[in-house]
Image (cartoon, rainbow, N blue to C red; front, side):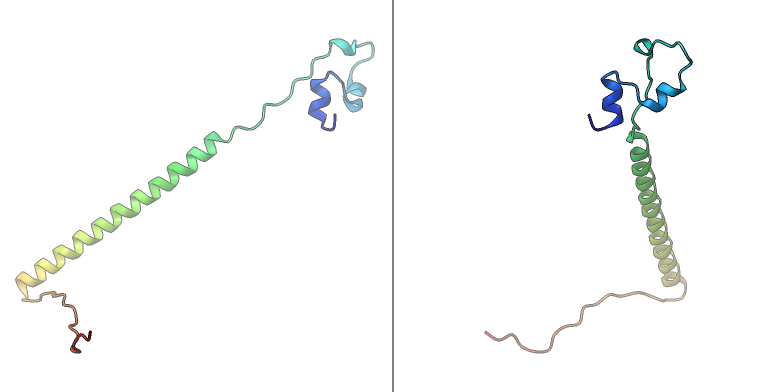
Length: 97
C-alpha cells in the first residue's frame, strides 16, 4: 500500500485522522468519505463548443465580407464602368519535347 487512498480503502485510518477523533471513538466504525475524482467531460465539451462557435462566427464573417465585396464590384461596374477581370499570364516559350 503506497498511496493514502489505498490505505483508506483497506480500512486503515491515517495517524493524522486518528488524532482528530474524539476520545473514546471506536475506530472500527469510522467511515471516511473521500471526494469523488474530477470529471473532465464538462470542460472538454465547453472547449469544443467554444471552438466550433468561433469557427462558425468566422465563416459567417467571411461570407458577409465576400457578399459585400461582390455587391460593391457589381455597383461600381454598373455605375462607373469599373470592372474586374482575372486573366492568367500566358507563357511565350514553346513546349519542347
